[in-house]
Amino acid sequence: MTRLNDSHAVVTGGASGIGLAIARALADSGAHVTITSRDTERMQSVVGKHGRIWGVMLDVTDPRSVQKAFESTGPVDILVNNSGTALAAPFESTSLEQLSSIMAVNLTGVFHCMQAVLPAMRERRYGRIVNIASTAGLSGYAYASVYAASKHAVIGLTRSVAVELAQTGITANCVCPGFTDTEIVTTAIANIAAVTGRSEAETLAEFVEHNPQKRLVTPGEVADTVLWLCGENSRSINGQAIAVAGGEIM
Image (cartoon, rainbow, N blue to C red; front, side, top):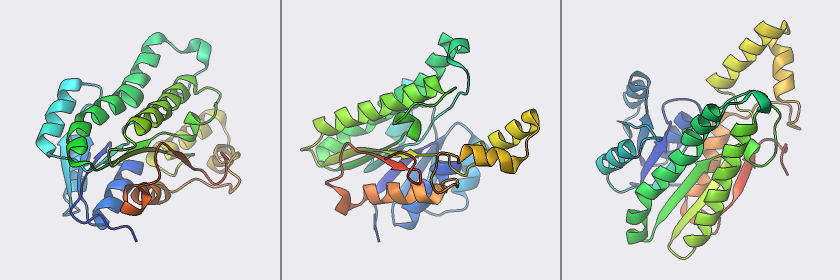
C-alpha cells in the first residue's frame, strides 16, 4: 500500500469528480492535500469533510492567480494537474475563441502550475507531477478535435519535461482516463438522451462502445493509478501516459 506520510500534495480541480477522488486517495494515504477550485462553495464542502484536505481558490489560466495560490500553499511534493474543460463540436464549426479557451485551461494551466512548483522540487531533489490527460490525448475522437489537441499537447509537454528532470529526483507522468463515471458524463448522457429520444441506457452503451469492458471507468480507479505514481516505488516510471480505459487504448 502506498503511503505518503506528511507529503504535501496539490490537486487542481479537486472539488469534484476525478479530482476529488484523487484528493481523498492521497489524504487517506497520509498526505496533506490542498485542492484548488474556482467554486468556493463546493470546495469548502469538501474541506469540511476531511481533516487532511484544505482549499485554495485558483484560476489556472491566470499567472497571477497561480503565483498567489502556490505562495500560500508552501512547498509542494506532489502536483496533480486535474483542472480541465471539454468541448464537443464539429471541427469546421469550432471557433478560434473556443480553441483558445480549451487550450488556456487544459494546456496553459498545466504549464503555469508545473512552473510554479518546480523550483522548490529541484531544490529538494524530489517531486511527483501527475497530469490528468485523457484517452483523447492518445487517439483521435470525432467532434472533440480541440479537446484532443489539448490533451495530446499535455502528453507531449509532460514527456519532454520528464526527460529534462530525469536526474533530479522528480518524475512527470500522465494518467489518461477513458469515459469516467462522473457528474459531467452523467449529465452528458442525460442531455443526449433527451435530445435524441434514445434511452439513457442506449446512450451509455454508445459511450462505452469502444471500451472492451463495456463500462465506465470509476474515479477511484483513476485515483489509485495516480496514488501509485506518487509513491516511492514508482520512481522509475517517468514520462509515461498511462491509459485507464479497460483496454480501449493499447
